[in-house]
Amino acid sequence: MVGWLGVFWVGPLQAVNISDDAHLGVASCASSVCHGKLEAQVGKNVWLNEYRIWSTEDRHHRAYQTLLNDTSKRIATNLGLPNAHEAKICLDCHADNVPANKRGPKFQMADGVGCEACHGGGERWVESHREPGVTHADNIARGMYPTEDSSERARLCLSCHMGTKDQFTTHRIMGAGHPRLVFELESFTANQPAHYEVDEDYLKRKGSVVGFGLWLTGQIAAAQNYLGMLQSDLLSSAGIAPEFSLYDCHSCHHAMTEQRWGGLRLKQGLAPGGLRLQDNHMLMLRSVGEAVGGSEAAALDALVRKLLIAGQTGYAQTRSAAAELSAWVGARKGTWLQREFSVAEIKRIRKAIARQGADGQLNDFAAAEQAFYGIESLSYYVNDIDSVGPAVDKIFATLEDDSKFSAASFRAACSAALKTL
Ligand code: HEC
Ligand code: HEC
Ligand code: HEC
Ligand code: HEC
Picture 1 (tube, rainbow, N blue to C red):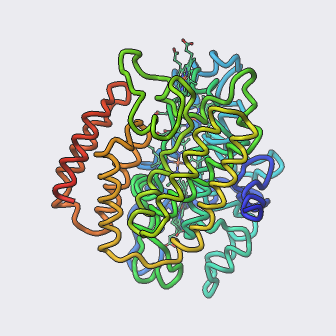
Picture 2 (cartoon, protein in one colour):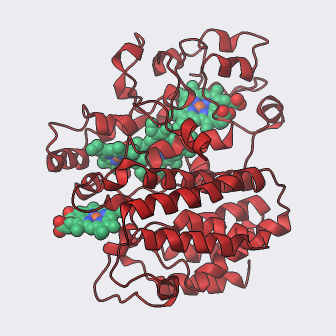
Picture 3 (cartoon, helix red, strand yellow):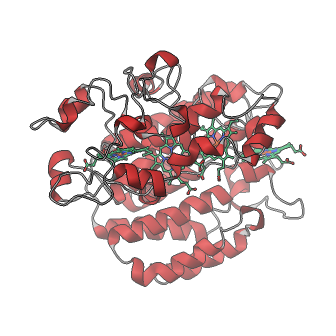
């Protein structure tokens, strides 16, 4: 576990070290002889219209522009910042904010989350990567980021979509008006949208993981990333109280008339009225544990319970429970991620998610939301989305507005879905 954290907390600027090489700017990739073609090219191993897709359909393209809009102005004013578009805390996630001495002549902050924010600084590979005979491994050796590796990809996306101890949407930033963050690797990979195709040639070059593998890798990486932040100074950095953004948002943000205590929480030994940490990604892993069988789910339950109680008790207890749980999740990288799951097993995992939902174990909005993403992603993977789609849509309908979320409606939608899943 120490080794893993050692790899994780690299670089003071961004937790994902997108190489120390200079970033040359989107203009260096976008010419019409490179990645700036209008249409996908036939007979080439890559489409070469990646720039067009990114600049017209991909929200990363407008991530910097967002910092100039009224919401960002309001956030900046509330935080006492002169503006958002020059604030390091905003640029770290809304642009490719490498240090000034790592910006090539064509680099522009206004490009937002550009090619090199994900693919790494091009200084040493921009010329060589288009030469014949150069392999993907050669590019990586010259500083290209291994986005095809699902664990590395998850780490990259999560560094902005969940945050790290060094770049994080604290509760001060949320309170100032930033939207809540959510992430699920499989769905977000599909929604980006893709500027590549995982075809035979791609598999030969990169042997990538898709579908179930992406979902599971994403859940493991998200749990690890979160538990890593709980162990860091971030937890105790907010003054008199812990950092609220590390707790379940809706445990505080819900109507007082909605009485929730009892049931599972009582069973877990949590005190009413206490703070509750986030367990959404762990609850997804619980479904995998259930499908795998043995004592996996029970072991995870015990560790999650310990963490939740620690989160009501003190910083030291929280850090140590997070470390223990993180070691358990980390070990599943070696077992679950190396293992072939059959279609029948994946269907069992999907069913376990819906059953947890129906039983009231996913009553928190963030957990219900992950359940939806999971059930949907796994249905694409087992290739029966056409028949289960209507039931999945009904689950989604209960999640459209988090301020109107009713746990009872969500439970009912999950119960109904169990009949078709
Ligand atoms: C450098 C930070 C950063 C990285 C790395 C990053 N993103 Fe994003 N992403 C953002 C920001 C910021 C936005 C919001 C842009 C806006 O609308 O202003 C965003 C938006 C998105 C959206 C649209 C969300 C929506 O609600 O429709 C998707 C999908 C997405 N990212 C997927 C990914 C995936 C997949 C990865 C990893 C391969 C990734 N992102 C890596 C910062 C990042
Ligand atoms: C940890 C990374 C991170 C930090 C720090 C961060 N953001 Fe964001 N921001 C995101 C991501 C990711 C999204 C997209 C969320 C989604 O749609 O899933 C986003 C979305 C937004 C949106 C909403 C965009 C839309 O149109 O829906 C605004 C506005 C925004 N951020 C402004 C800011 C400002 C201003 C700051 C600095 C005070 C800031 N952000 C700091 C990651 C970050
Ligand atoms: C938010 C992260 C992100 C951004 C921004 C981004 N990419 Fe990608 N890109 C990916 C991911 C993820 C993949 C798929 C994994 C892989 O093949 O490495 C990918 C794949 C590719 C591929 C490989 C296709 C193949 O078949 O091997 C090319 C080429 C590419 N991107 C070019 C670009 C260019 C050019 C830009 C900027 C205009 C860009 N990307 C912006 C994440 C990103
Ligand atoms: C421990 C309780 C707690 C948790 C957990 C919590 N908040 Fe808050 N939140 C508060 C309090 C207290 C305020 C201040 C309310 C006020 O000023 O009237 C607040 C204010 C806010 C506001 C501003 C509302 C306004 O009146 O302008 C937003 C937005 C917000 N929180 C979002 C979030 C998000 C997103 C999360 C999870 C990442 C979260 N909160 C987690 C207690 C919490």
